[in-house]
Image (cartoon, rainbow, N blue to C red; front, side, top):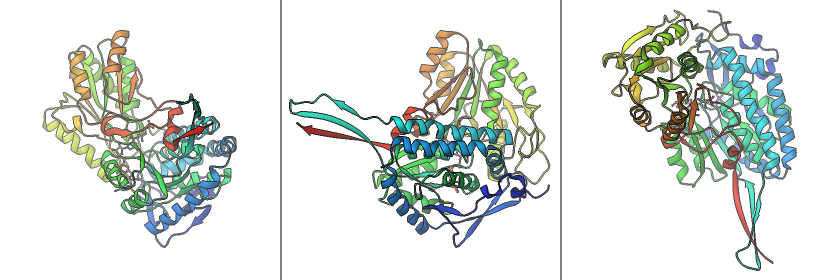
Length: 488
Ligand SMILES: NC(=O)C1=CN([C@@H]2O[C@H](COP(=O)(O)OP(=O)(O)OC[C@H]3O[C@@H](n4cnc5c(N)ncnc54)[C@H](OP(=O)(O)O)[C@@H]3O)[C@@H](O)[C@H]2O)C=CC1
Ligand SMILES: O=C(O)[C@H](O)CS(=O)(=O)O
């Protein structure tokens, strides 16, 4: 397998930045860390490794810059955000190539993520002009009530490796639109996509200090700085529930306003009255997007007895056609997993399920190559006693559970600490309405396996998170309400 030689793959090699972006300057740290290509195992870049103290300096700059940024009119902020959107779309191919090289997803998916990420900037550029306050009838004859919405201040962001572009823009776009400044620490596996966003933010004219990208291997130290630094007023995190808990505990001391997009355990339910072929296609996109490495992927597939065999057979046949390989190569549908540890977690779930009675109905052939490849596995006869029923697999394992009744599957689907995304296929209108109401999740996909859009409020209930990202709701988390009581 040849070395990646990423710069040679780009139309604009200047997008491949390895320095931190702080206060409008590109900063070399005293140390660097390696970024590798999960499909080939080779090192593709060495990125500045900031210390907690250097991150604190970036927060100082963001704090100062935010005061002026908040004075810009909504339209002025909208204009630079729109330019950022236009630059992202003009550089979509290069941003996708950088993403595939560091994260592994197939190029087509990476291009899709760039467009998805850019859509949040486009959407919130528009919202920047529509941050309305209100007046409320006074409670006394000489009183008038006015409600203002003001930016909360410096917003700190910690994001995962699985969507290294969109998870950042889904936070930075509403933050900047609201008049906040932004300090973002990307995952150590995927800093290059974040730094390329900073290159384009600078070109768009976003003022120095308003948008900062702070690569660092010291995730715990940076997290503590974000939580303990009094100049930070907002923490927004996307990642596992375990890390979300740590951050919430740390943020409690300063009573920090937090948004949490955490882990999932999505049920994907197929009722007897479903269009089975549509359900199979929905299961493919829902289970195998990013090779199963998304928080909204189907983690448990429940199929009603009447269509259980038909669905299982058709799903196995469809998955057997999917190509596993290097995301930079034409035709690849399933890229590598992010690390060897991610492979082991999937293998452990397969071993646990088969040890407890599950039947493997498809096991793909993993390419013998240096990358973190793992071909998909489908099992049926899954039960709630198996790890895959309570733990998020985050990889290419599709466990099929059989169920008999609607009440039974609702109980099974809701029996989890998570509550992010859920999906079901059915035609009966009464069933659709009742099941959508009964599922304890922030998101319900009906006759679809993909729900991601900037137009909708994305987020979870229970231990899948706090707050919503996207839609007009998404900007509220970056605003404070101020009640002004006027005596006239
Ligand atoms: N609800 C949602 O929208 C999403 C949820 N997730 C969930 O995240 C998990 C997979 O993503 P993964 O990246 O492994 O999740 P992690 O929670 O391990 O990591 C997420 C981010 O947090 C950082 N981090 C890790 N430990 C700490 C700490 N103590 N303090 C501060 N930051 C820390 C990581 O840094 P580093 O990588 O450098 O260690 C990374 O940047 C799954 O559970 C998935 O469901 C993922 C994406 C979206
Ligand atoms: O990180 C994730 O899994 C994303 O939130 C999923 S989505 O927003 O692309 O659906």
